[in-house]
Amino acid sequence: MSNRNKKPIEVAELFAGVGGFREAIKNLNKELPGDSFKVVWSNQWEPSESKKNGEDQFANRVYMAKFKEDGHYADDIHKVTGEEKDESIKKVVPPIDMLVGGFPCQDYSVAKPKNVSRGLRGPKGVLWWSIDRLLDVRKPKYVLLENVDRLINSPAGNRGRDFAIILLRLKALKYAVEWRVVNAADYGFPQKRRRIFILAYKLDTKPGKLMKASLKSPQGFIEKKGVLAHALPCEMQDGIQSEFDFKKFPNQQSIQSRYKAKVSPFLSGGMMLGSTVYSGRIRPIPFPGSKKHTLRSVVQHVAPFVRGDVSKFLVKDRREVELWSYAKGRKNEPRRRLSTLVAYLSNHPKLKGKFDRSVLHAAAKGIPVTLEMDYDFDYVYEGRSKSVRLAREELNFKVADLLRLAPKPLRPNHVNRREIAKVLVDKVQRAELEEFSAGIISDRVISLFAIKDKTKQRDVRSGMRAHAAEAVRALLADEVLRPCMVGGMTVALDRDEVSGSSFAYGYKEGGMAFPDSLDDAGRTIITSEGGASVSRFKHVICDECARAESNIHKDCAKQGKLRRLYPRELEAMNGFSHSHSDACEKLEISDGRRAFFMGNALVVGVVERILKTLVS
Image 1 (cartoon, helix red, strand yellow):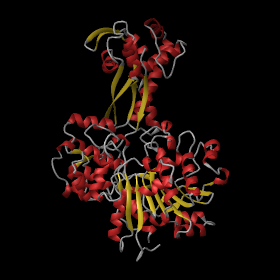
Image 2 (cartoon, helix red, strand yellow; image 1 turned 120 degrees about the vertical axis):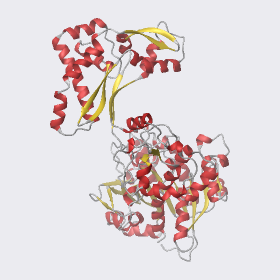
Image 3 (cartoon, rainbow, N blue to C red; image 1 turned 180 degrees about the vertical axis):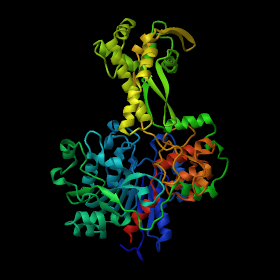
Image 4 (cartoon, one colour; image 1 turned 30 degrees about the vertical axis):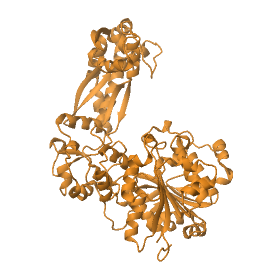
């Protein structure tokens, strides 16, 4: 639809944050003839800052500094949408042509394990119903929503149910719908950020009529004719792979009671018209001739605008480099569930009732070292050396198994000195124990060094028996009784007894690039990217290599030039303007808070592409 000589599309921005959608609109209005869009109302409210007045909340301060206060509602949206009467909404929200918003995604976020994701029933997922209420009352022609891609698989126990409810409500409100899971980096943007974009429009709009005319060829619409297809070119990997019929689920109650799915019927791209939903797996097609923006290009673009003392972003010394290297490296190691050790200490005759849990927890961290409850050795493979560990508790499980003592795989296994001695003097049982130990530490070596060749894996396993024999001797052969400090008090503890009340489990984690690659898009920014604490999820780059046209160091970690990303760089990765960064600095917003904003933000350029296509 062409917007020349027409009034702007009047927009409401819901869950505005620091204004990602509005940044896109501002950029488009500069590019297109005349103002194509006009934001007439916006809302932002952060429940975690509910003790503050809305205008004093951090995101609202930035939003109002950038876009002024006119039409901005800096209060809890439930105060508007929670009222039963339509007039309450109409008093606050003016007539609109379009609703946009990245509704809060904490209940769908990949930062949480899938089995604790609560979806629409969670405390922030329920904000979908505020969108629903506004659409029902104000009936805008267009809707553009953004969320984490997990939304199409939520909740964990019934895949796709929440997305089905959203689609059902949009159907009831007489919208046709397109959706697409988009990785921004696939289209040249400098961040590997995967998000789902949901575009809905009334049936009497130009795209609505086009979808209706294309119903005989849903694949052609999804690949070629839809708004998202033009904005973000794609192809379907295997055609339409899933069809869903809402005639079987005419209302929300029927979905809640009868919808059952172990695998979501909603895939990475699709469309809905009336009761029928079509979807399939989408392969992105990069923009022809477009430039690929990398982390290096972001750093070089932002460099002239970085101000002030940036020394706090430096990785300062060798010890800090080692901490970052460990955090980002491959891991296959035993980890101790400290709660079982704390429980043991709290019930110890000499300690019972004397210390609070925090003191016992602090002591529990050091006791395994004092009692030598871990066996560590350095393994060298192709010139690289890594530390490999076996925990005493892991051997307790096998000893209990050999003695048929009903071992518990996820609980402490107590074995006393007499029982341990039985296994150690029995040649067959000791050999089996050593073989068990060799299997664990072999798997850890193979995982730590990422050895994929089967022959080399066999070589590792065949040479591990000597380490296993030494591990068994070190962890089991001798009784260890040593003084341990607990809250300033010295208590003699027995290793057999302590390890029998403790539990260690194998922990695996893949490695990440350290430092981050400069010749590719950056990883997804998360809300905890700010601050100096070490984390595998934060970006660390070599400053000298970033400013050069290509890497100038063979091993950047040894050059002393590593640093975390500056807030302006994080903002640029999301496509936010220098004026946004200027506003944050003028308001003295902390680096951690600015990173939090960007962890919640969207990639502005993706929204620009969609909105531009909509009005073209």
